[in-house]
Amino acid sequence: MLSLSLLALTMSSRNLHSTLLVLSLFFSLSIADDRAILSKLSASLTSSPSGWTGTSYCQWTGIKCDSSNRVTSINLASKSLSGTLPAELSQLSQLKTLALQRNSLSGTLPSFANLTTLQELFLDSNNFTSVPRDFLLGLTNLRTLSISDNSNLSPWKIPDYLSESTDLGTFAASNSGIFGTIPDIFDSFQNFQNLRLSYNNLNGVLPKTFWGSGIQNLWLNSQAIGLSGSIDVLSSMPQLSQVWLFANAFTGPVPDLSKCLNLFDLQLRDNHFTGILPPSLTELPKLINISLQNNKLQGQFPEFKSGVNATLGDTNSFCRSSAGPCDPQVNVLLAVAGALSYPISLAEAWTGNDACAKWTFVTCDSRGKSVRTLNFAKQHFSGTISPALSNLTSLQNLLLSDNNLTGSIPESLTTLDQLVALDVSNNNLTGPVPSFAPTVKITANGNSFIGKDVDSEDGNGKKSGSGSDDGVQLSDNVASMERSTWSVTATIVITVLLMFMRVC
Image (cartoon, rainbow, N blue to C red; front, side, top):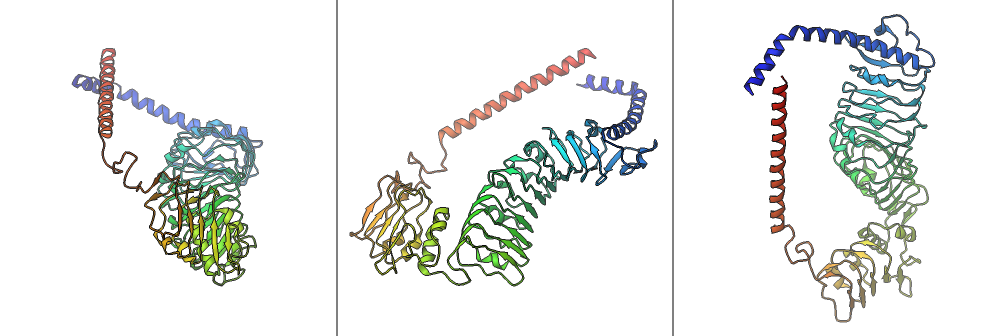
């Protein structure tokens, strides 16, 4: 190793003069390359930009250079430009800003792969037709990308490698041909604030890494297929100020947004939201605009503060058409629905403020006053059995068979002194069966773990989370593989060094 170091030092001293000459030549060629690349850009356009004349390219309109005459910025926004972009743009190795928005540029976008100096890229409102796979690869200093309103782009996906751009703060790509899911990479960014992906073809659920992020403006509205699932993650995003999720396929309840103190614009219309609105929604201090129409929201009609532009429509399933409390039996049944994640079928069927007014699955007494039977058999519901059922004091029959219910049978149901039948067969219930009165017929077959606590024991009777011999053996095998890999790597490195010394 010492001989190798001395050899390197001798060669370095001997070639110092040559190295300086090479660096000088490289510097001169770089300046010439910048000039040549701008000339190629000019030639690729239908007509040269105004003011692009003379040999002093750093004085051309929209061009900025550093003290070494290296191009650092090209700003030709709104210049009525047409034509294409040359691939050589990525060779402007000191370029920080490229602003070409609001023109009529077309063709395939060039790759900017590994242009590590690039910080701002504005390409929106043009007519580009395709995006290369390595379009944004290795842009480690990228802060802003805006490519919205390029409706002619062929379908493309947001690349996972965008996580390398840890300084990214704005990604704007509305109406730009994006399809697929939103990648779960938002924990990679240090100061991400703006995500604008409206009018694309996105599907799937909101990324888990939205959780706790600093996103302020979230525009995901109007997807052709539609984003789906819950929006619960919004409750953990306290920096939100504007949220556009309308015209999608989101489901479930609207979450508690009480931590979003800067939220002023919330657009949730045209989805499949169900459930009761959280009371905190009407108390948001900066809320100005909210749209909730064309959903199936339930519970009490919301009453927003004066000055809030609230659009509620007439398709929701609020218990009343104006502010005021819901009937007690309605509240109980809504709690039951909540334990099932507010199925859309219940939200569509349970309207009005009278549970005995021909509500599906509900049978009342002859007077039409008290709920006697609740029959959810074979409805494919998932969730748990709500303890709130004990407040239906006249309930006689509770039929919940052939669903996907989990958890245990609530102890509170034993207080229903008129109950005669409880059928929970063919579910996934666990835990003990409470002690009901002898007059109650209990049907609980088809629940493999009834009478067992699956949270504390596995199928072999072992406590969950306890260690096992298999786990120890797996750890030993992994350690052995790591030692073997290190040994092979070290051998390769030594062999290469010996070969290098022989050559020298």
